[in-house]
Length: 477
Ligand code: GDP
Image (cartoon, rainbow, N blue to C red; front, side):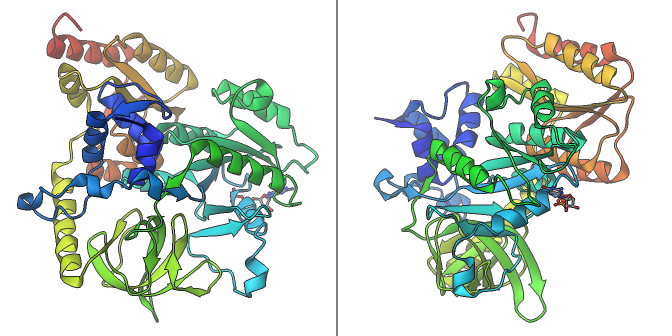
C-alpha cells in the first residue's frame, strides 16, 4: 500500500511542501509526486497530529487515521495566494486590480468588505483566494504559528526600480516556506520600465524565470492600467493545477484565523479561511484558546452566508473571545467538548512557550549526534556585502555529508524584526557579523527563543562550528 505525498497532504489538509520537509528531516528525501509506504504515511499523520480529539494524556487512543480524509472524498479547491514585494512596488494596487477581475462581484450587489482575504471568480468560472495583507511580515508570522495557508506567492517587482532589499527578503521567505512563486513585473506602463533587467537581477538571486530558461513563471503587468491581469490569473491557475490542491468539503470544518478583532457592535469577529470541510451557521467550534458557535457568517462582499467550503474566507461571529492570527479553528460535537478542548489548548500554548526548544548551535550538534538534522538553517546579517559573501562561503565549506548548513537569508544591515520572524519560523539561529539586533528584534528573539550570535572575526564563527562538531560528534563527523 503506497500513497503519494501530495495525495496524503490533501487528505490531511496540509501543504505538500510541509510534508516533504518533514520527510526530509526524517532522512527521506522524496518529492511531492513520489509514493511513500503505509508506515511512513502513519508516521507523518502522527507528526502532523492535528487530531484535536486528543484532549488529555489519557485520551491518546483516538485513531489519528480518522483525521485523514479518504481519497474519494477529495475535491479540487481554489488556491490561496499571497502577494509580496518591496514597498511601493504595487502590492496594494495589484490586490485591488485583481479584485476587479471578479465576474460575480457586481451581480450580487454586495459592498466590498476588507476582511483580510477575498475570493474572486474569474471568467473561466474558477476561483482564486487572495490574502489581503501584503508583505512577508504577515506571511512569516503565520508560518511561525504553524499556519501555512499560502499555496502560491506572487512576487511583485516594479519594472522601473528592480530588485530591492524587501524583494530579496520576500524571495528568501518564500523559499524557506517551500511555496512556489510567480513573478509579476509591475509598472510596465512606465517610461523607465525594463522588464529584462528585472529578469537578469532575479537570476542573480537564483530565481530563474521562464524567459531565462527557468521554471518560475513571470508576467508583465500594470496594476494601474490593468494590463496583463488575465495572463497573471492564467498563470496562477496553471500553478494551482500543478499543485493538485484538493480538500474534503463534506466533513466538520477546520480552518485558520487570518485576522481577528473586537468589534464594538458585533463582539469578537474572526476572519477564518476554511481549510477543509464546510463551516455552517450553528456549528460549535474551538478556535485557538477560544470557543464559540457560528452565529452568522459574512463574506468579502458583505453578504451573509450560511455555509463556507474549502479556501473560502469568511468573517465568523459568535466567538467567546478574540483569537490570534494563525490560530486553528475546528468544529466539535458539542459545547462541553468545545470548552474542554479550548482549555486544553490554552494550557498547551503556555507549555509551548516555556518548553520550546531553543534554536542554537548546541541543538544543532545534539541533533547531529542523533543524526536527525540533515539540513541546518541559518540567518546571516553582516555589515558589508563582502562580509556576507565571506561568511556564507565559509559556512558552506564546513558542511559535511551529514549536515548541510542552509542560509535562509543573508543580508547587509542590523538584525531586524523580520529576520527574527524568519529565523523563528524555521527554528534557525541568527548570526550577526559586526552588527547587532535592534530593540524590537531582541524582544521577539527573547520571546521566541531565537539564538542571536554575534561575531567580529569570521574564523571565530567557523571555529565554533567546527569545534562543536568535533566535540559533540567525535572525529567521524
Ligand atoms: P505597495 O507599497 O507595494 O502596496 O504599493 P502601492 O500599491 O501602494 O503602489 C505604490 C505606488 O505605485 C502608488 O502611487 C501606485 O499608484 C503606483 N503604482 C502601482 N502600480 C502601478 C503601475 O502598474 N503603474 C504605475 N505607473 N504606477 C503604479
